[in-house]
Image (cartoon, rainbow, N blue to C red; front, side):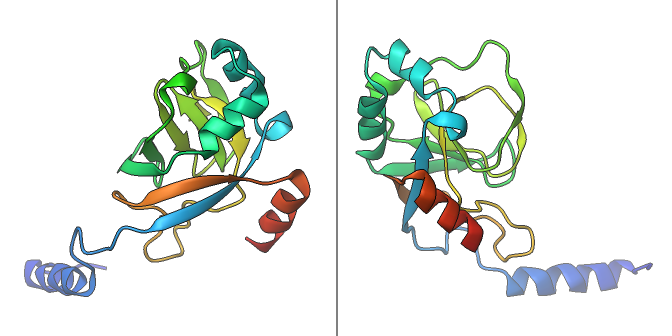
Length: 167
């Protein structure tokens, strides 16, 4: 398909008119269920050891604060989250993983994040959420937006599996 400059300009103008202006979305508080540890959080014990805490204390401290979505980047829909308890700050892996599963909840330095899709990554994975953070078939395709707030809520493996089957 070939468009003239005028047709392209009209198409861009129409799409801009149909889209929401930047900053028009009202920040929300989003509940993120997370199953911590085990296969879904293979670095939980290492984070606990680094922080001189038990795994249960890491989960408690990770789920206590309200986080702020500072920025989306690295991959589409990846939220960089502010609000991590400083006591949970943990260095990134020396050798990043070749594949981190979608939904992995992780700590990288003094920030928390959630991998929206399977990708390489070097953050410490402490759990996984069944929520889809990025779906290109939706408008908007990302679940979270800059300025949103979120809370992590621990769930047991059976609840994780149930929620995952619904998404």
